[in-house]
Amino acid sequence: MFWKSIFDEKRKEQEFASRRAQLAKQMMEDHLDAVVLFNRINIIYYAGLAHQQTERPIALVIPKEGSLMSFIPRLEADHLQEYADIEAIIYSEYPGDAHPMEVLTKALKSRGFNRLGVDADGYGSYWGYSGPRLSECLPASEIISLLPAIRKQRAIKSPWEIENLRLSTIFGNLAHQMLVEEAELGCYEIEVGQRATTRSSRIVVQSLAGIYQLQDWGVTPTHTGLKSGPQTAYPHPMAAGKQLEPGDLLVTWATADINGYRSELERTLVMGEPTDDQRYYFEVAKMAQEVAFEALGPGVLCREIDEKVQQFFRDRDCGQYVRHHTGHSFGLEIHESPFLDTGEQEMLQPGMVVSVEPGLYVPGVGGFRPSDTVLITEDGADIMTYFPRELDDLIIQ
Image 1: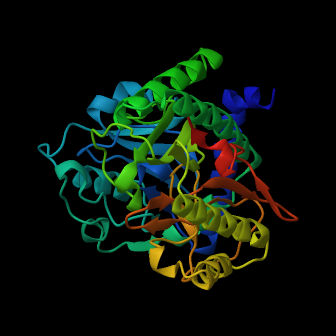
Image 2: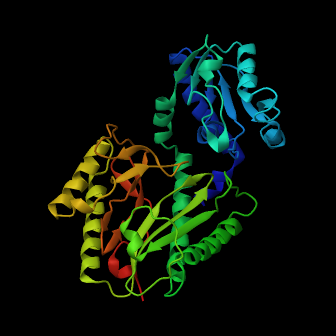
Image 3: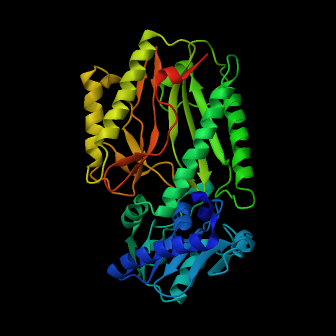
């Protein structure tokens, strides 16, 4: 099966090396001595070095020549032994006797790294961290932001990334089916999601026994859940201890984590026979999604997709119920750029993976949001998710 090579360590390292080679071209253009990455996702993207982000800063240093370097606290030193080809720059603790940024800048200076590309000018403010910006520690250095170039590179998925996302859609579909099975009258929203997540996560671990590993704390192999009733009229409501009732709309979601990559699948279900209003707004949202599907393809401006969907809603007097754009890219992060938004200037290209999720949020009726994962191909678009989209298939009796 196609998924077996996804977890092959040699292939993974070839993937990371290819990404760094592409970054090296940007380094040459900008005449950089090294690149310093603080964002944990960018560190995973270029080196596969997964870690839990805390108040202790971690950075990846990619020099123009020579070995990769990981700037890490002492508590991560044993973890780094899994990555034998990465040199460790270790500091004791945060805040420590010497602030970690002092340790990092001293190490950079000692190696003659004067012109640096960065994804951020320092570590930020995570979990109470505070510290000087990198540009404050190295006033003689030239600090160049590579964030636009990094985002552009990450937007085009490699064949390996696409395979990860495709496997995610398979397990995500399974998780969603189990969510439907668990959704019974009187059950609490939270328990329905937890039961389905536990069942489907177990299948992922069993299917990939010995080779599966998560890339972060606080996540599960699959994740699925729902919001019901009046709360569905808000795009992102918080979890509540609500029981499922007859006539409730259910706005659902499901995904699976494969090497850190997560697809997106969302549906609107109904507990029992839908009302006329529920049927009407469901069909409008579904048709808006089809408008977007038909418009997707290489060379199409991202904003054009959103413009067509928003015009479709306005033509049906539903514009006042729209709360967000049509979609977004994703991969290692569930939201990445570019976005299917009227303000987005980027063009769709083969290898991009986007969500298509036009939504309507109608006070007194509820929310209607279908979402699917779509790959932009050389000659069109491939809808990777495949859970039923017709309302009659989404009724829970």
